[in-house]
Amino acid sequence: MLERISRRERLDLIIAWVAISLAFGIIFIKDAGRVDLITALIFIGVSLVTVGIGFVAHEMAHKFTAMKYGYWAEFRKDNTMLLVAVALAALVGVVFAAPGATVIYDTGRFGGGGISRTQNGKISAAGPITNLLLCIPFAGLLLYGGISSSLSGNLASLIGMIGLQVNAMIAAFNMLPVSVLDGRKVLAWNAGVFAVLIIAAFGILLLSFYTHLS
Image (cartoon, rainbow, N blue to C red):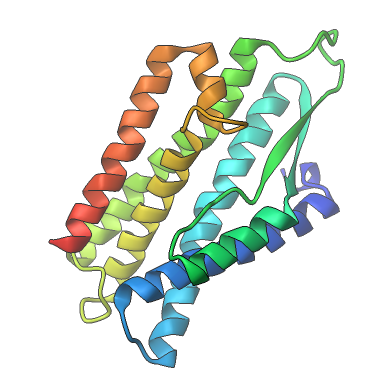
C-alpha cells in the first residue's frame, strides 16, 4: 500500500497534517481558557494524533477508491489554504479545514473517457464516510474514559472527545454542497446518500458539542 504513496504525496500529507493539527490545537486551547504550557502541549499532541488519523484516512479513502476505479490519485497540499487555516484559528478561533485536495488522473486503464458522475460521487463520499466511521471508536473511548473533555477527567476522555469532534467537523465541512467540496459531487450523484451523510455529520457534530458543554 505504501508503495502507492509517492514521496511528494507523503511530504504534502505530512505538511498539511501538521498545519491542520496546529489549527485545531489552537482552537482547543482557546476553548479550554487559560492553560499552562504543559496543558497546551498536551492539546497539541492530542490534536496531532486525532487530526492525523482523521485527515490522512479521509484523503486515503478518496485515493484508494479512485484507484479501485482505475484512476491514479494523489493528495496535493494548498500552501495558501494551510496558512489561512492556521491564521483563522489563531485570530478568529475558527478552523477552515481545506488543506488541499486529492487530485485524480485518468490512467486510461478502463478505456479512458473521463470519470463518471457515479464514480466521482462514490470517490467523494468515501472521505466523509471514513470520518463518520472513525467517530465510532472515538465515541467509545470517550464513554470509556467518562464524558469529560477536560484534563481534570483523563487522557482517554480527552482523546475521545477531540477525536469525535475533529472527525465530525471534517465530515460536516466536506459535505457542504459548495465549490469543490465532497458534498457537491455526492449530491450530483445521489441526493439520498447526500442527505444521510450530511445529516449524520452535522448530527454527530452537534451532539459532540452538547456533550462537551454538559
